[in-house]
Length: 322
Image 1: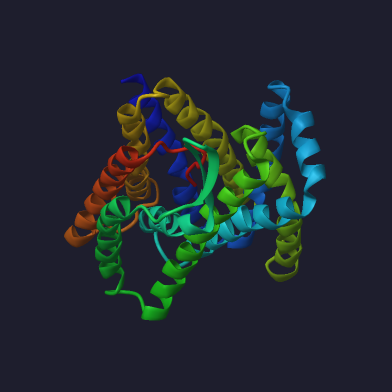
Image 2 (image 1 turned 90 degrees about the horizontal axis):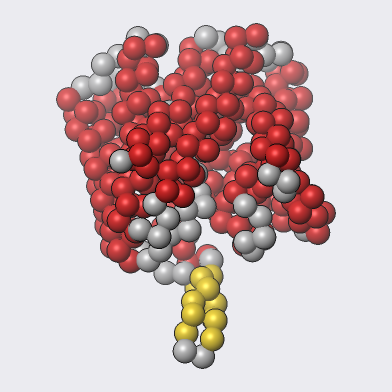
């Protein structure tokens, strides 16, 4: 029960990403600063965590050994992931983005053939190309149906082009995040823990965020104090508190696939927390019954996907949410 509670708490803090990104947009803040400021704020917190764990030197050695892969895949995994998510906040409510973001489960499954898995055979350890997990993917179609139902509400008061501006960036992010994350796992080859890898990817993606910030200064000016503060809250809640809580939860049930699936399924609560947060904090429009049905399908699909996936193989638990 403790692991489930920790998992739900992690989903609660992850949801702040979507709520505050929407709040910053409604307050007139630019997506440029919502994206870049978060990563600037993340560095000191992650640096202290890695330093406290006495893992900084191995990280710097790894980054120095392969600087180009770090630069490329960190920019993909973090830059092409988070910048589009922030951009989409100008066109759709946070709860809808949170729900649409769950399409990353489908994207991640479709990317499997691009990577190799280490398998122990009678003749020794071999590398085989990953296969698309069709059983898990069939459960993911429930998520896709839920997303489509929620988008129906938007068609009543938004143009098709506006809907696409809210959806397509999220689709791009859903591909970039698992692609960059898994490529970096290949580069690290198990030599770094998750905190080292996230810190390293944040540092390696700094050229992109600095360049985006320069563009922001030229086009929209400096961020307001309110947007700066809220970006700091996102960094602390989503990438410090939520990450620590989620990995504590998975550590408690490590080795028990059924319980591990239950913990991972708690992340479906992100959608509900983001929805409730916007209703109470931002006074957003109440979703229609069709949209509520979509929310239920997305959350249910995530739970079913987690359980089916764990029946097929043992996951790495190396990816975290938004």
